[in-house]
Length: 330
Image (cartoon, rainbow, N blue to C red; front, side, top):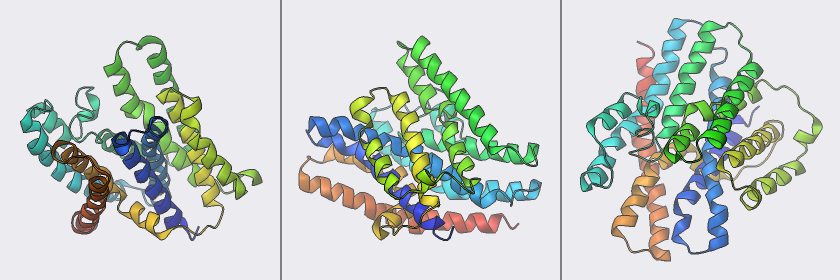
């Protein structure tokens, strides 16, 4: 898998562009486009699948004892949390103090303790994208537990179990929570529903062969087209998510078993995608508050998002990664 980093970065780039799309499409009054562009929210599921694949690919043979578990957790903490923790007070200062949101002290503390995801009112209440950080860390700790508990845990079995839990949550939402939108939204965002996506990536790592149809290069075009038409045939967010996850899984399998030439710009966007993910909504909120929307101003907004994210990646993310490497050696 000599091109592993290339196709994973490429998919991360696509994922963050999808997320950007879903958070900005409302600035253009094009009904059909806006109906379709909500599909960009599925970029988070693509991130999850790629994350599950990446983490398991790197660590499946490295986590063998308590010390290696400690190294793994330290590296993940310093990879994710420095930028996340820095942005929490920034969001609060610029938006919480204007009473746009109820950012009480318990809410803020729960974010710093990575406990916000256990509370429906806190899970996505400050950065508006932090629910996925909580899901990500639950996956990290769950994977450590599985490595610790089972010498060789069954990846397929883990996928089936997490998918069954997700389906139970979906059924509860459909049948019992039609009127309780807050709890329904919470369950959708929570790891109880989303965890199967990570284990899709984990399971794909284990595949050494697949039917030729999944490796057929032209099938990639069909998968992309199927994904693009989802909003026009499926209204339910939950069902959209399941179909998108399946399509993303098949795309990842296709990329794993084929050689492609990947666009270097999208690959680089994938490299800085975490900074874009955490920063973009802050800048979009600033834009909405202070800037009159024009096409030129919108182009400036997108440009600033990318420029700030490049700086953030090089100054904050890289520094955090290096600190994590040093700390894991202590």
